[in-house]
Each structure stands twice: as structure tokens, then as C-alpha cells.
Image (cartoon, rainbow, N blue to C red):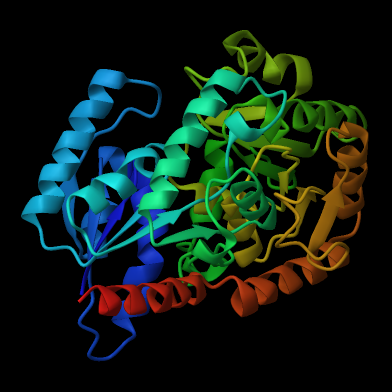
Length: 391
């Protein structure tokens, strides 16, 4: 069986497809081939390391009617040329077009993967009713063309069913997951933690709270900044490190002038995009994600540091709290409450034994519940009957 996995960028391809490659590598005698389709950008080396056949396919993240038509035509020609048994799409643009293109091209089995509905479905975040209507129309057509819609969040599943985008019987659920062999403190080369801390200007005794996120308001950036200012006023040795590139072309994007002054006004160390995010986690003490964004239920910005035995502070929302056992592997913070976030950071800062205990519990939970091979196995089990029925 040959499965095409379509994402919109290189990082998504690496994160989304690696679990399937790892799972199949462990299956002796498996005759399943994974083919990846996306742009590679700066992740060409990592995509090559997957060992899959890869087709380069560019698509703009934002509205681009001419470019989208070109993308759809190229995708159709590829599906007609290659004898795929199944296609799995992932990401807003691929999900908007790929399922019905695959169906029209005669691909026997199609799965549409949803990891959070995003800003358009988050009320009050600038998505806009017209954009939401268009996206729901595309999602409805894609879900109709798909055999299955794969979700990781009960709220998203409920929305799909209640909005008439897909019947309940067509949906299935998994958790999200993380590569526990990559995201582990032991996998970080000796001396790398000290290198990263020196590069970021961190003193040996600095206590580091890291947040990895897109620069949009709903991720809780303002709350992170306000908590930083409150905590550092009393304890300057606590450093708040924010990881993520500037956001462009998004209504909910944080203005450049705010980001340019976030260090001066709030004391946040904004370090922009980092490809070595694992090493930044390794150099940190705690990870935070005070997000009220429409996450997929199990954000990687929580799973990855938890796998590295870091306690986490997550927003107490249906889209964020899934991985966290409050008071065991981390804390849940009241959404939009920077004072509560500051209080939880200080609690962890002042109790090394608590941090160690929570970190060990976090890693154990990831190993038991969020090893990414678990959901890969589930998805393959959903696909196999579909391709059998089509023959």
C-alpha cells in the first residue's frame, strides 16, 4: 500500500510524518510505503532523513486564488500519475483542497487530519465571518470527499458534527504525540545546554521559563509578558524566553512595535525562530503555554518539554489542558490571567523538589500516553480497511 501524506510546509511534514515512518520501521514485513508532499524550505535535510519519497509542492499559507488553482492542478496531475492507495491531508490549505482533488483523481481512500481549527474558528480573534464561511464551505466539501476525518479534540469534533461539516460516523479521534527518542534530555549533546544558555545571554543561576508559540495574541503572549514583568520585578534571575518568528499577514498577529519593545517594556527575551527548539527546552527549567487559541487539544509546545522532563504551565482550556495533570505534571493557569501565571512560575521557582517531581511525572505521562507511534498505529488501522474495501 502506498500512502501520500500532504502537508503545507517542511516542519509539518517532519512532525506529522515521522511517527508513521517510525511505526512502520518497527513492523516487520510491512508493505506500506509513505510518500510525502509539501514544500521543504529549511527542512530539506530532515525530510531526506525520513527516507520517504518526497514531492515538492508549494502552497501559500494565506489566500492566493491563482496560486491555489495552480496548486490544485499540480496535485491532481500527481494523483493521476502516481498509483496512491490512500491520501492523508494535514493543515488548513491541504485540507481545503486535497481530499476532493484526491477523490476526483480516483484515489481509493482519503483521510482529512485536523489539528485545531485555528484562529478563524476562535471568536473575537480577527478571523472574520466571511473567511469562516468560506473555510467551512471548503471543509464541508473536503470532509464529504473523505472517508474519514481525523481529529484530536472533542470540541473540534463536536463543531464538525454540529455545523454539518461531517457526520459523527465519519470522524475518529486520537491524541497528538511526540517522538520520545528525540525529545529527551539525554539526546541533547554534552555541553549543548551550556552553549545555548551562553548564546542567549543566560547566567548559570538564571531560572528559565520558555514559551514556544506563534506571535498571535490568542497564544497568550501578552499574559506571558505581563507575568514576566511582575516576576522579574522581585526576582531578576528569572528569565522569560519567548521562541517564535514574527507573524505576518494574520489579523490576529501581534504588531511589530509591540514585539520590538517586549524586552524593554516587559523584560521578555524574544529570540525569534529557532530550529533547535529541543535544545532550548533542554536549557530551560519550565515551559509555559497560556494560550486561549484553538489548539488541537494536545499542543506540541506542551508535549515536547514534558517529554524532556520539564514541568509545564498550560492554560486551563479544552484546547490546552489535555496533556497536563494539574498539580502532578504541571499546573493549569486561568486563561488571560497573568497574575495567576506569575504566581505559578514563582511557586515552581521556589521549589526545586517540586519541579523535579513534576518533571519526572511529565515524562512518564508522555511515554505512557503520548508516544507518537501510538496514534500512527491507530491511523494505519483506520486506513487498511478503507483500501481493502476499495479493491
